[in-house]
Length: 498
Image (cartoon, rainbow, N blue to C red; front, side):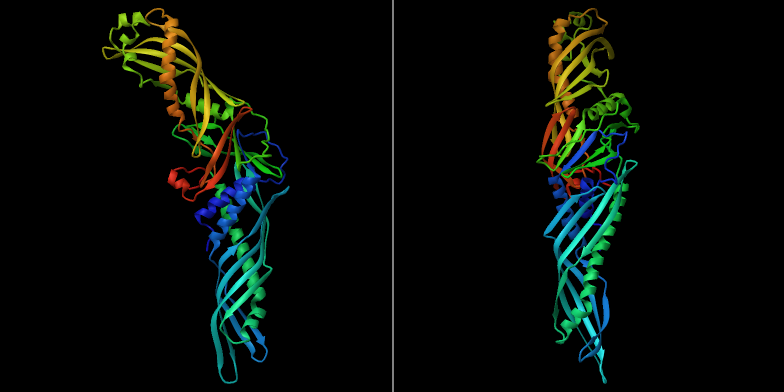
């Protein structure tokens, strides 16, 4: 049976994302840095290890072994030809397991294992007169099995290359129960096949480990280097630098900046940052995903340069969509265009500036608010107000997406130009406050509420996530849950291969 079920791929994929990211020399440095970091704590490693064992066992059961034939000399009976067929491992249990890091890789050990087998037996031997034969069934209990492997993953041009460094499967003993047969048969099978059955079990487990590693390496090679968020923007998920390893956690980095629709990275807008190791000491959650403020700045830059930061305010009361509603604030507007319909058009004039401080996220938005009048089916631009809008932002988690909302904290306004003479900016200030807070901010939040996907392995979802803003980063600390149909049910394909 092939070790290629969907659940097994998902489980193994997370395991090796989590803790088999150990280069030959973890002290090597690179000039390339990532802006999204993921730290997997001891709790996360234990979760990954347990899930790997559970899915590995369920994927290889039932496991068919090769038939065995052998001739043996039985006292009194003479030379007997015996054979075992339809040898199937139908259950395996690993009560003890551990994971340990090392300089050149990581060691996963599953010990104290038991396994149960069914099989058929047959024998034949010749006497002076006739050939005597018989057949039946038997069960085998494997005792004290230990499976361990050592592996490493190297970063090769932004993708992962898996290396199985060492492996072993050792069976301590077996117990055989033969149904039927002559009185000498039990001891005959024990003597003839005990060692062969043990070696067949060991070889079959090792073969499945190798097959699984080959398939996993192929999956690693096919991992996408970017996640398409929508038709405008994609997240660069290229692996960067070498993973960092301690005795309690593993950290890895991806590029983490957003690309435009033309797939040209906006990373050149930003200087490289020094790599800061994120300590998981005392972290009560399985993972911590850290997003540098430049991740959000890159998204803003992509949307700005793609000309997606301008819109007409539609959901405003009718009193503000007719010049009559502005007659006491902008009298000359009503005098020149009495009872004409209006539109308010917002254009962001430069990429928003996003700053993440301790426990706070601020954004400054530079925009123009243009008054337009519909005069005899002709759109006439009347005046333009330049705005500097200060906002506070809050980050939230919705499923596996990082979303958020924005609130107005302050703004300044000035007259950029006017075709109807000078405007009373003091009167306009109060009107602008109403427009921004009640109509512009809700429009922004409609765009922000979808957010963007966090780079998580296929089939996993955040659980009981917490968000912390600290030292220019938004950090998501979370446990994980695994559901085999989670991605297909939610329509999300994060880091999943085709």
